[in-house]
Image 1 (cartoon, rainbow, N blue to C red):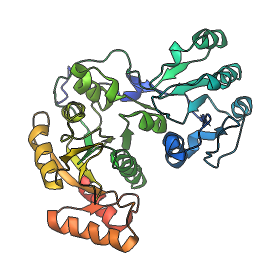
Image 2: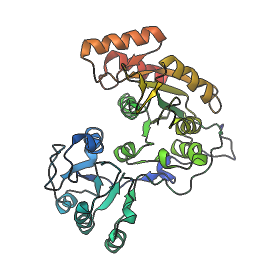
Image 3: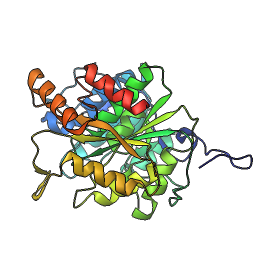
Image 4: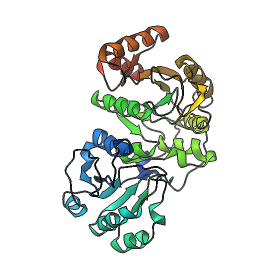
Length: 353
């Protein structure tokens, strides 16, 4: 969209109806005994350390992030604004055993932030206690009010979207790494979160998987509205255009994000869609072709900047060989953003070009 004398860019996401979170956090680990259920807490420790003051857990818990152990009141005294539930159990429930801690947090002057399927506002007595204490209950998986349908109108600024050959293979970590690396280069760039952990890390965003289908593209437009020409929004992708369950949200996010370029995320060695062995993983080439074909609806000049490889299961030499082989085969930069290095710098160059 070209801006004319009678048309102004929409405000940045922080000034719009995008969910914003109270920070810094005290991480609540509940009674977790399996680190795999505490991915949210570890993600916040690793990517949002400046916005975490410590952790609190019940006596039964054996998982720790290694941060200072603080009661809710001690955390409030250190400047915490919210108790954040940093674990996700089977079913996303909030057990009765956690309730005393939630009430304690409210009494200490903390808001409560949750990404669980269970709604804080549905828990007996918690809403009343929050109202009495003047505190907020923030369910991250609730989309904000005021969502609109997408318009497809062109808008200023530059946008990069992470897409994938599958779900759960690095789209969030890639977007975070690219946004931070661009910032270190002096580029005006923001990470735009579309999932619960990304929202908790960045402090704002829209949970795209909780948005009614008709409004997904509009939500993505709100998340990355018009901006100055030199500004980059690096948008966290969701699902995969090849996923039998999640392709619809991936498509809506692609159209609404209106990316100038995209990064394909892939995990070498994965052969089938996660959790659905009857669907083979598409090739990177197939993902590039389909993303361009579908993305041209709202971004006619869309292009692939490169490939992000999740090489966490490889040693250094094996990873470097894979990165080089993919780059040579496709003729575009490939890198593991977590490993960094020269290959990642080339990917960043391509994103900026």
